[in-house]
Length: 332
Image 1 (tube, rainbow, N blue to C red):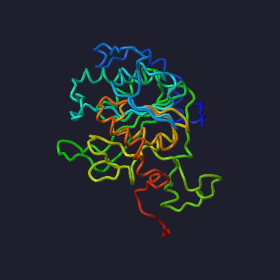
Image 2: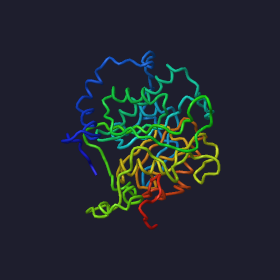
Image 3: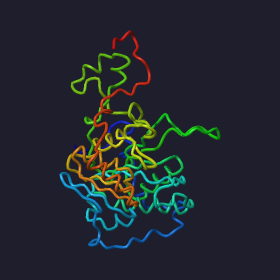
Image 4: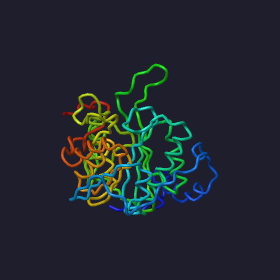
């Protein structure tokens, strides 16, 4: 459903969204400087008539382009018409991606980040939304640049996983930021599609939650995401795709796509990787565009999107995220 931001009567998260929207021009016109501003923006070769997807399919329209996302986005015929973007860019952590240098200097990486964000914002429809999956060391820069681009923050979510990389030099990283922004005052928001069992129902047996007129015992998920099927995809995980360095679980994209798009909408992923976004989008009747710089990686992603499909469609929906056992003598 379409949801329009309206000034609420009380303080809280909704008021914060409204405040950000009403003051977005002040941020966009500010003199905030970030490290990446020290380099010139990427100049894409504009040749829209020559741009063709490497792979495409119909019912629904599904396309996968091979190339630098900054160049592909600049020539995309769908610019200004994309309903939802999900971006999980390289983190610049020296991951050995096929054909990609993941060890840029800091100024180069920030410039690269600002460039692909700019292209994504331009690709969005006026009612479009954008999610960015990013770690601690670049989250602040992404937020500030999106605000400079007149985008409004809706949620700063966190994807939490239990299997972090072991280290003793600092606390073990067990999260990535999931930044949710919208372009205009109206956005697609489908809370009923992603409800989960509330703690009131699963732990406390609170009768009030079962006496509601609708969605009895359910709630919209909180902004820290975890639970069964939400862990990092690695090892012998059922979703694991061989030859891919990093994968996001289907549950993550399932929540984003169901909540922030409708059937038939156009979903775009500028860093297609293993193809999770396109796979989930296609499973739920969304049109999709993927962009991947490696032809080898893209070929594997396309096989997954069009042949393998989702492994756990619907499995993570509606489950409880409670971290305590039942109380008060509740029966299972």
